[in-house]
Length: 151
View 1 (cartoon, rainbow, N blue to C red):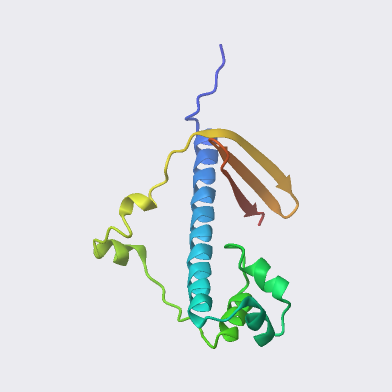
View 2 (cartoon, helix red, strand yellow):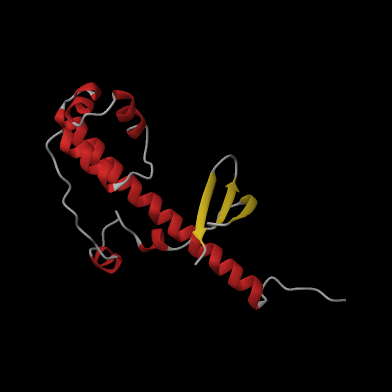
């Protein structure tokens, strides 16, 4: 009887690749959330209405509403425009994980860096000319899409 183990080099490699893609997607979303929260906080502190924000940067108020509906893949220009509307700017600061872990803060615990096991209901891999997209559907309705471009 010829069987293939899930621990063969091919399966292990594919599993490692998916884990790396999932980690990258998680950190991309984390950084989108951090930037979104910082910008929204600045807009709220300004006290300006969306129509005033839109007027200050010559945009349609509907565009401001779309941008502020939730964290998305904003460009740096979008961040810049929204902050310019309230006379603010962002101060970039990079923190290395090893430095955060050295602070021994509960805010950033090493466990949060480790890949977490999730009950996956289905995995869909779609191959496009621009790369592959992997969608993980977990229980009950969460879907995480991981995109990888081809070299």
